Image (cartoon, rainbow, N blue to C red; front, side, top):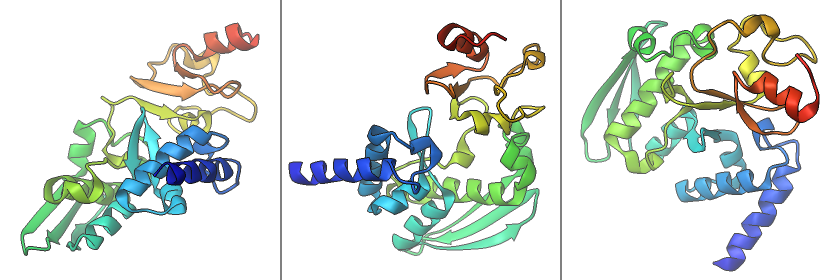
Length: 223
């Protein structure tokens, strides 16, 4: 109802101003409201939505842990058959008894342009597991998660929106305190294709190649 929508809008305002809001949602009532609406469609409460829903290139992404919880809520029984840093396999049994085995390997991650990313380098076994869960959800019961992808699904062909501190995690060398995510000496390096960063001054979304020019033109900060 309209009254419910208004109440949710007010809830989004309170959450966006709180320390419970993730950095990407902090102070952004509209974005929090959209996340809460997405969570509502999935049957999630406001705080669960904040913890498990993120936004990548304007599209909602749902954590693998929450995808697994939604699948189990829908009646799926999922077990890990294999878990190593190079391969993960899970076996799921649906509510009707249908059995489906899903696997994902580090070779597939390399082919998709994933394996070199920060989380994949640090936590390959966990990322392989997350990819398996998301793949199972899409093939076995997309309705349980409304077909929403997990962050582990995004590869080099997708445009990913990152905050400056997140972009720093995939750029070598990482910036020091008070420095821009893109350094002068990095400008000759090929930037990750399709990456958009959030300007730390105004919040505008700009490409990595344009960030330094944007900072100079919009905020008077020369290279």
